[in-house]
Amino acid sequence: MNRLAHAGGAALATTAIALCSLAPAAAVADPIRVMQCFVIPPAALSHKSKGTQIDYVNKSRKTAVSVTFAVGYRNSLHNFLRRVTDVGEFAPAAEIRHAFPLYSDVTYAGKATHGCAAIAVHFKDGTVWHAAL
Image 1 (cartoon, one colour):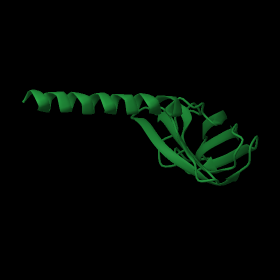
Image 2 (tube, rainbow, N blue to C red; image 1 turned 180 degrees about the vertical axis):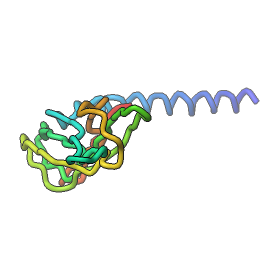
Image 3 (cartoon, rainbow, N blue to C red; image 1 turned 60 degrees about the vertical axis):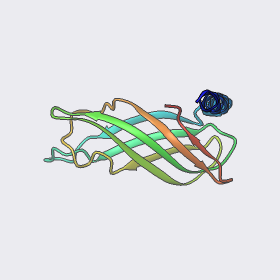
Image 4 (cartoon, rainbow, N blue to C red; image 1 turned 180 degrees about the horizontal axis):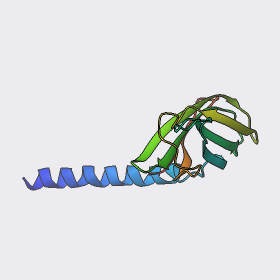
């Protein structure tokens, strides 16, 4: 039993060391800078928003092929947190301005979002960045 406990402790220590060595990779800076992010006001005679506008810059030195954002929004009834993915080829330093149908199904409660950040970026070279949680 003592040997089993020692083997389990060694395995746990090895796992801890492996996780620590991964920590710097998770701490890589966000390659996307969100310039502005807002819910688009509804069309005349409508109460539903027209979607969400996200303007951002690829700060990395690599071409991104997809960027996933998490966007929070609150109206009088609910707090929402949804994801949207922008797909294309986004060159380094490129400014991207895209509208998405995100939140076009909810009652409009103003332009302000509550959090809007990139959570995953896939690059043309096959590498992937994920936001540290």
